[in-house]
Length: 124
Image (tube, rainbow, N blue to C red; front, side, top):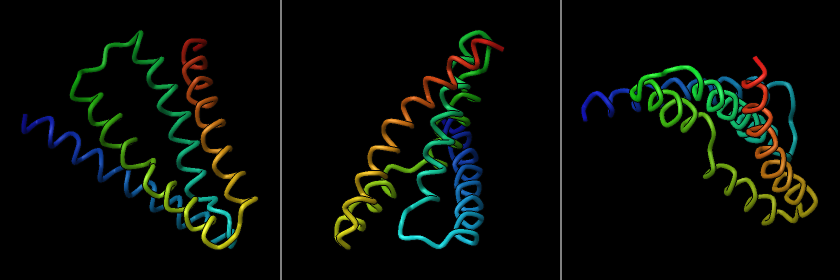
């Protein structure tokens, strides 16, 4: 059990740092009321998880490595709590159009990218 916890913790630290770096990069270039950074990490994470899920279906990866990647890295890289908070903040500030676009883009494109990543992994 301790090895599993260490794999998740180590992966979580990698995912959190990657998310922070992407946030910093996007926020330094684009100053907007729209939550571009959260949308970017969630959509990128959807693509990566779909791709890896498909790739790992035909390539053996240890259960510990799967924990490290899926639960640790991707679990901390993407973030539902920030998505929920961003939607609430947009709603509270009266940005109904941004909230609707963000909500739909994250959900629709997130699912499509997960499927696309999976299909892409099958074609390689």
